[in-house]
Image (cartoon, rainbow, N blue to C red; front, side, top):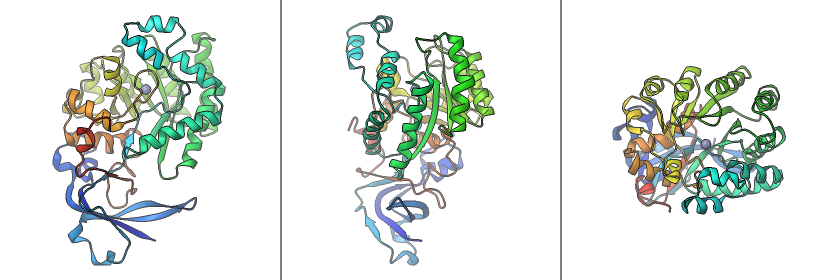
Length: 408
Ligand SMILES: [Zn+2]
């Protein structure tokens, strides 16, 4: 077993207390911040690359045990913060085309309805994604993964949902599968979101049958996704349709998550908790009743404040959720319509300013809680002995500089 070490990190944040408290009621002490910290990790070789494997030891550089005296060390010279790698637990990273024209029109006063009448909106992305080859989609996704990783993201969730037909949904999921081989240094969690909208060429009932009888069984058989997601909202899938899809997914041994209570309150967050979903995402309009159901459950409240910012919508009630004891994660929701932003640190800036989240709550939300939203919290989200050595070395001496500077 070959060992390596990082020494003299200006601040090492292990997040040990965050994982002990399951990401709930997080305070500064839970971060386990160590000034002048060091990390020892084992390595593994994957496809000829030597990659970090498991955390062996963390502590003060001055207390590094003698048995590690001879291992290769990288000196961070007190200029870099060393933290658990970020988890972006909600993205729509695989799509073709862009909707810059719509953004400009929307800012010029056009309504969503007017944009949709001109062939815009999600169906514009669906058309471009259907036309793109798997290779073209992969090339676009690869650049996006590199960009996101440059901010310290080590684990990505990526959804399908811009195909809305059997062939294209599977094409998108195949691209995500190829990313796993292409980037062995990162972790990808793949989500089937065939129920993102309704396709223009089929009736609602026919598309529901297509998802339940063809898409989901094939996705499960080919092991193309870890999870199934549904957009339950006013104008999209109803609570009953969402329940049917997620129950079928569970029967096929897929995990579940949902886009919940974004445009209207549908009590979908309460359904996520009832079904034992990994996460309920968005929650701009969540009711107090659903907060009571969601907060004590194992379903993570994933907040996506970049979307509210970009749509000039009211933000999710983050403080209420946190104070009720929910495990709250933050993610980009990177997508071409409502959040064209790959920078998780920029999302943290918005969370600090508009959700009123503290440094400790933000760190927890983009590490441990994000990992829990993907069911990966036993391996990822904190730097503790035996867990994956998924760390990020920030180009700043303290963690909060990552979101004090914005859009860097
Ligand atoms: Zn989304």
